[in-house]
Structure formats: C-alpha cells, structure tokens
Image (cartoon, rainbow, N blue to C red; front, side, top):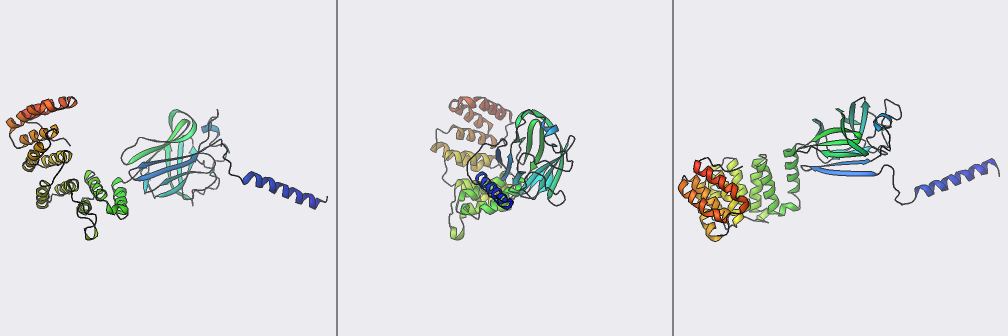
Length: 366
C-alpha cells in the first residue's frame, strides 16, 4: 500500500470514528450538568443558564478559576459554555442600568475583587474569546462573601424585595452576590398596556385588576381610572361591559385618591343601590368609612344586616359606623350584641376595638 493510500485510509477511518462519536441522540451524564433557573421579579423574568461543576476536593477559588495562569483570561462563571443570564425587561445591576436581553456572564478575578461582566455575545464556549472592549455591555466590581459549603456550583436567588433580588453564585465556601433591580411601576404598567390589547381586552377582571394594582401602588392613577371605566363600560360598542360592585368600588377608590369629589359622590350614590353580597358589602363599607362617608355606609349596612343575618362582621361594621357618626353609646351597644356571634379567634381584637371605641381612639386600619 502506497503512502498516499495509507493516508487516505487513515482519513476515512478518522472520519468514520468522528461520525460515530457525533451523530447520536443518547443522553449521557455530564460531570458538569446543565442547570436553568428562572425567577420572576415583579413581571421581569430572570433566567440563569449554566453548567454546574463540582469541587471534587479541589480548592476551586485558588486553582480552578485561574487554572490557566493567564491574567487576561476571564472565567465563564460555570463550566462549558459561558453562563447565560437573561432579563425580559430593563434592569439594574448593583444600581447600574442594563437593557433587557440575554448576556454571556463572565467573571474577572483580582484577589478578593470580582469584576462581573455582562457580554452582548452570549454563546461563547468558555471565556477564551471574550473581548472586553467590544463585547461587554456592563462591568461591575463586587466582593465575595463566606457561605455554607456548596459542592456543586449553583446560583441562588436571595434577599428578595418587591423590586430587587440578590443573585449569588455559590461554590465551595464562597459566594459572589450581585443585586438585580427593576423599576417596578414602569415595567408593570408597560406590561399592562401590552397585555390589555390582547385576549385580556375582553376580560373585565383584567382591566379592573390593572387599575387596582396602580391604585395599591399609587402610580399611573389617571390611566388606571380609564381602565376601571373600561372594565365597567366595555370596549367597542360596549362589548364585554360588566358593571359590578367590584369595578365600581375600584373606580370610587381612584376618584377619592384623585380628589374628584363630584364624580365620587355620583359613583357612591350608584354603588349603594347595587345588589351585593356580604363580602362586597364588607369591603365597600370599610372603604366608605376610610374616606369619611359614614352615612352611605350605614344605609348599605342596614339593608345588608337584614339580608345576611349570619354575617357577624357586617354587624361589627355597623357598630363602628355608629362610632363615626358620633353615637358612641349605640356603637357600644351593637358591639356588645355582636360579641356572642364573633369567632373565638377574633375575640381579642373585638375586645381591643371595644376599648378603643369607648376611649374615642379607634381608627380604621390601613
């Protein structure tokens, strides 16, 4: 066999072996298994996609991360492909703005200082070809912390608030934390505007819930009022209109917050004539007392107590209403009358209410 024929044979043999190694769909356990974790912050989905190596008895922070001895080489913050972090809305990282999108996550190590780099190119194998000048959208410096030992590298979501969450890379006995923040009001309202143009446009509950969220967070109140009206009156030609106690109460709450007294009076007048269940009556009368409207509250409660005689909390509300009408004597009489109907677990609170009414110090909670 000539050298040429031997070479051709070897090439064909290698190609055959390569084909056998590459072209199958078997699932084979990996030493650094894939992990994907998603959590929602407000309406922002945060996903961390990484491969999770084990320490296997190694001092990983001393020997693995800088294992190639190249000070210019970053670490992929995991194994295999670069760790990928994605955000469905704009966020902040330790207070620094970062646009919505998917980023390759790399870490530069300098003693106990770690530079976290979020790269536009999110599909690199490792960090070997990371160009800090061209690829990195944001870099922030953080310090490590001690943590309970973690054999497998993982990412934890900790210290959550309504608008922030700390993401912490934990491996061995160290944690590298950074805080992701969102503009909660901005992102939620923008999401509402988008979703209310889809299938939710035909759901009165969606318009009402969006309006109620804005009310509860004291934001976007004018548009929230328009959403409440849309829940009540429906869309084109009144399609999906559904006037009910729930969305009318939302509208009244918004009018009160916006200090539109005439419109509020009209809405309350209509509300108090509507048929409502005991739960709706409870929330409406609490709202009316909160905005110093005890007269319409009493009218609603008088009718409701007769209609729902077993609803002890409505009798409690009526007693409190008399207090706000400056009739403490009648308030105390009603409180004493309802005492025998009140559940045992509410008795301590009822006793407290009775003491505060008697002393003239009672206030509506919230």
